Length: 531
Image 1 (cartoon, rainbow, N blue to C red):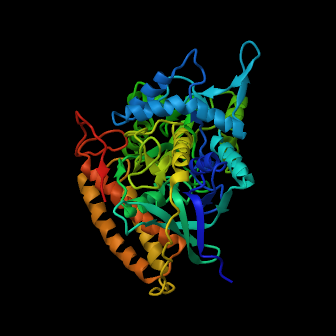
Image 2: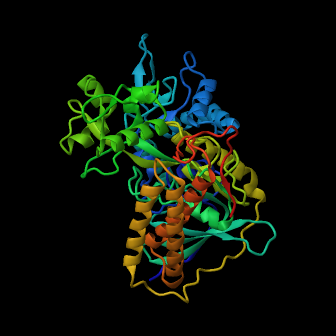
Image 3: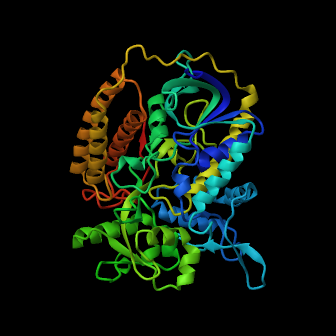
């Protein structure tokens, strides 16, 4: 028996990571919230975040202004200073909110025996300001927030539901969102959810690349849906490649946290010599874009499959205490990081651009918000600094909640929404088309739109993606939706946005490096694409 096809709520939050769940919890005491999770509730990038969350807790040695300046430096001249200051200024209060929810950040005792939060340091930061839960901060945040939303009577949780498209008000002069079509994977049917407000918290789009540290759900869904609805996007050319993903056939996509370099790990060539001093005076603590390009350069120069991250010179107990997850994972495949170096390669990790929003998380379409990695707030610029990502999720989730609650009582009930029309489609008998196109997309994005780019490679990629879009749109028009089809449709759309943005930037800056324009422009501006 098929389930109910039409739902209504006050706010629908698409995504169940730190941004989505923080937003839901901040709203739920005042209205009804429905959270849509594409997979299991806990699955997403937040769960796998290792390093920590940046906030100034040590006022004696650190300052908000220092956090701001470090972020601006890492962003390579493209951060919005106001956005950076807003985020850093609200960081401590947002961390206190997480602590109140029960997130168990690591503690230590000072010289006087007083307990305080243990602060670590990561690349780009001039001070120790990273709160963390060992080397599994994201897991601590995610499991804590999941436990809270599961208990809240005003939150409805819909797992195994893919958001398909936002529903526009096509009759009014004003652009307005009134709901979303979702694919109920368990019931194999498309359902309609109407809401006064819709919030995108779908994460990034690193699955567009062949090698990524991200989980399978990171397929750019929110960015693609917002673009199709008419939202502007910005800075999509800036895809961050995490410098150190484990290179091992049995543990693909396993990230080696930036905090390991913050605690003294050294990057080495296969012969055991260091190379980061040749590239930057900050050595292993240089921002991620510099470290990733240095590794890419050395691998190509030497014809090496990987480089090595070595922390074995540190005390064994120190390593196990600070990096228990990494120690256990590596040991499971016979690699003892207390005795030997870790083979690492760069992997697509974070989408610095996204759907344009203001400081309340509001997009340029009424009733639609975007929070977290899906959004472009101006915080990250041309390169995200370590441990600012989870921070952005919490800060802007709280801001969006405040803005929504100020409007919700006066917001009208959404009109009756049209049901999903499947009268002219059939079940697919050509799933191989999806598999083939999926692989082709991720392969040419890695080869042509990766860490080092050229105009010729980008133009080649654009031609390929335009052909794929035609094939996928034809397929989408004729067959019933599936998880793989929906993700592929969104990834191809996001790939086009990345390529077009990269072609528009005639310089090398931050995460965007092209051999045709190695210089930096004097007056850099965000790359803004308009539907």
